[in-house]
Image (cartoon, rainbow, N blue to C red; front, side, top):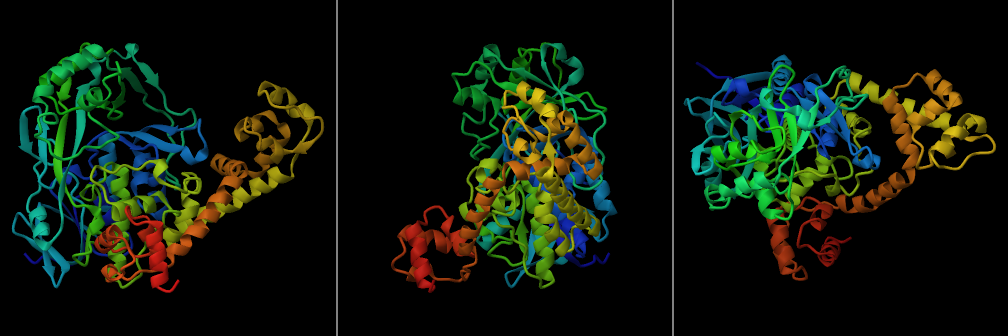
Length: 623
């Protein structure tokens, strides 16, 4: 058989691999997606949910650029919640609970509908590299494929090792074998590798639970969605539930500590700081007598349940015994125990800001191979790797998002500049310009770019243009509309805010912190009739309110962006010899030589490079 040559080969069909393949193919590259199992494409290995704090912003950004994660999430959602509504809009984060099987099926459908994507089920065991350039892959079947670029998105499969108590066995996920060969070859090429650890809870039978003893967690009354396209809104939702561990549960779990691979040293890799196992929680937070657990359904038509917060690598009998002491779990039946998994990763400081490796041209890393954790973090890396792989082989300029443009830019800059020795997770606190990087304006920020590079559709760009015009129409209306006192004073009194004694502009009332635009419209016939005449979407009205209320903060952040961006325009040569600059500190020389920043702005963010070192560089390059 003669196998065709490809422009881009993507290794792994998890969240990173799927977005990478779709992006490169939709931009015109001929893509081969290689996966060890065609039945587990886009598998939700951990919890059946997308988005959350800062992660929801990332999904919106992927969608705005032309990726698929938002669309697939909407089509497989069983619940939608906007988190952090009680805080400012920079913190609002969309989240869906998803049907695990439907999510994977929708992803596979999207990929099969995408022209230019071929599939191959096999394990990639090595790369073909010629003149320090990736030119193909070889598989366990002895098949070779040639290409112009390779994207590795191996997830937890590189030399994956599963731990359940004292038992350990090779695997990249429960029931699936580990991938071997790639790590060893990359190390031979000069790459540095490390080990990380993650874990997942037991899956249980929802028919065996007593939900009457738990707190019901409903979805939003008026659910939103991820995608800015015409994906459907949810018309019905499934509830999640909340319960808690207790001291009896903790006592039973502690019985198994002597067999825990975490405490006996069998697990060497560091686990995620912000998603610790249940045994780690009760060890680190011994003063707490209970921990919150989220009981999450796995789909519309299954009784399988995910116990969020009960990740564990303890022996299965200990897990089972402890679970039966949880309120509502007294008769619980287990489908499979929780487990921990160790896997290889490559410190991401070995990458450029396009996610291309510095050692091998045309080789890109995306997802957990870079030390991240989470579907959303993986998906956005895959998207950017796919974009840049396509553009490089077509001699086009690379696409790099700045920290002020997107959470995606923050994530990639953090990885390549600071590196990570524990699974990296995105938070709103990592973004210094989060008032600019809101979930509601991701399309306005990024769709023009997505369209310009050939990824976002004409319809998407037209939708953004219309949205910008509609927001301006709403803001102009509110700025010019006067509200009579008798219409709103009873409402203002109920809010414990001052009455008005003459007609005032709607804008001045909206700027009061107690007043939200939705209730304002309900309480003012004048405003309601005027808004109805505009015939605009409720999300447009919400965006207009945010622009009004937070304009001062937005302008202040934009001024800071403008000042800081000056350093981003000062380019540094990749082969710059920092050792020759005697005025630099020794640590700065070491860090700058290792990371090879592309701009002075990136250099300034490297841990160990001081402001005085930046001043020295400015002087040295004549600035």
